[in-house]
Image (cartoon, rainbow, N blue to C red):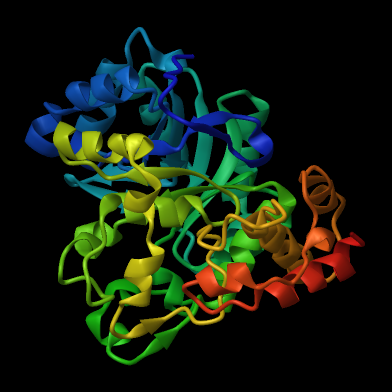
Length: 387
């Protein structure tokens, strides 16, 4: 597999797949009748971007990507969606077994491949929908494909943290494709994804991350389910003054925010041009101050993150060398479970400095943009982990 030193890679949960922090969505593949696909894939390949999401069932998109991947299929990890077909010149989501099988066969043919690395059960935005999938033929078909080696791992795509959480807790999926950004993370769970970007939902003051979203991220980390991020830029809205937050963010800030969430392995950027893709790839060469989203968050006119640890690292450096963000993340994972999972304990034990070495000097708290009570968190971590 092609690996570029400047690109950073993460392990995608329990799949064991090493994926680039910057991944690629398929938004640009359908424009100009697929003419941009090869240039986008060439740029990705050159820069070590090895993860591609393909949700579209468009024959043009599938065929143009298949052409672009010819001779280098093994250099890429493909996340492609089952339960999508093309009808009357447009995309259709389906749960019909015959249509699903037809759509997947077309997918493999047009991509010129015998397998998909991660097969995503497409668009599961309600708990009821997941329950039908789990009990019915859709999940059975996905498991059959996996047993036959036609997909390597089963995933689910969702905008609803409660639906995604049920899928994760079922043990049936290894990957979740989820919408992660600092505006959507404030919104409560719902079955209508359009609510996430509706202006009126940001009209009142909003405070801190929705607890169901936080629980999803922490549960994925605990159970080894990798998260691939969609809509990190909110469809581009977060990058403009029309942002729901009332202030524009940069692409680097949005990417950094997503990568700081527990279990996140890759951010799938929806580039419409090679210039947009290059801008996201350039994230890997940005300075810490360019990635710093904390100051921007603090200036949002209607959004407050007071008292909530964002794992942003502003508390560093600790006078005793403690990785405060990591300690806090592991502490929150344990608290979310209500017990101390062995995997979380092992990660904590691997830390060079433990919470017990905190001398309560309070220097970190003076640096924190969000007023987190860090000294109390270190004491709580000692209580949970024993040192």
